[in-house]
Image (cartoon, rainbow, N blue to C red; front, side, top):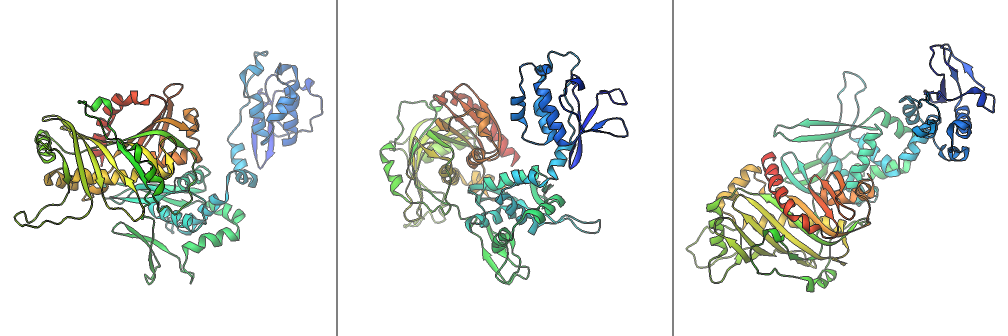
Length: 579
């Protein structure tokens, strides 16, 4: 029945705030088999209760206007609020194909706002970890109640340190992995929980926390978090005393003094306001794993017949080695037959490449040898001492004016029990493009056909650091000084771009299903950073793009290597310029 304004009548669901849903034009009161207990408001529109609205949908679903759609199928869709049930019942255009003047229902945002005011809405969305994380944010932030108060926020790096402490104390049920994080203008390797970051995004989406982004004096970016007024209300209603005590256990001293997060020379520590108590955090103590790798370079970069070394026969050594992982990791995604390409751009030129080839002994009868980044301050003395941890080099092929390919065998010292057979294939070009490649033969007790992303994240951290040491031991002092200028004296932890190629992925799904905002995406973020998009390249090939790199899986994915090398030459220049 039309309302006073000539438009179809309105059904108002009484669910917290009122949500207006327009009756379909095809609805005829004569078709109703029950008497609607309705009231007419001041504007002439009828108001129905939520229960009446549900019954209306049920009867409409069984009427002739819906053709093949039965009342039973409509009942199956009625699981949420009244307005959501209307949306589910009328969302298909072909339902009204028999009636030309039909129109779909219009649902306002009032329904969602009403749901968010209901306890049941958050019961379905908030886990115990959500609430504990929300309480953690509330301890270190506060929204201003009036214009005279200051807004209080907690910076992201401090919150990540606290999340790590919550994990190792058993309060927060998350995984963590070694990731590089920029603090100020310094790049620090930290044990970061991607699941914790994902729950922060969930809290932001539910408007329980606020975020702010600020520029720094060094042209960097700082992100900070703050609990919202809605978040404070949720904590009052839902936070249990046991959860509150659990979070307090690592945020306060035994005397009840609150702990704050600070950083000195790449090391985080906790301290009280009076500075009488101070203890170091282990968040920067990254974890090593045992692994065996073989050098690898794409065929499009090879120019000679000389084969590369294979360490597949040594894969068993990885299972006999140890790791210093403290957390119990949850393996959700695994890869098979993995090759890793890591690229960067370093200031080079024809003369620099020629000097590098002289150092490598490319034209000597016996090529290669051991190299170190040590500068000899007393070249005329008899005795020479170096620190353990050298780089062995085996030259594959070279062009005096363009490039050199070689294998780098890493002999850096590791903790007792850690076994790392670490061989890189390295490609250096006169335009400054540098590529490191390796094939994973085994990580811990996982063979080449079952590589865990949790373990691979530790391996990538190790490769990133060791590849910097390789080049630092081969380039000139002038080039090292230029890197120090560009990276603010922090060349050892400079950023690189990763490409992971895998013949297999488990579980095998369509690309978009990996970005589920849950455990699959959180695990992929451990190796790719924040994920941007996922694409099906073919029925078998999947590509996932992240901030720190990209992943391509599928049989024969090596056919994409020429295109990926061209992409790397551009993205590495961009990262260098934008640092």
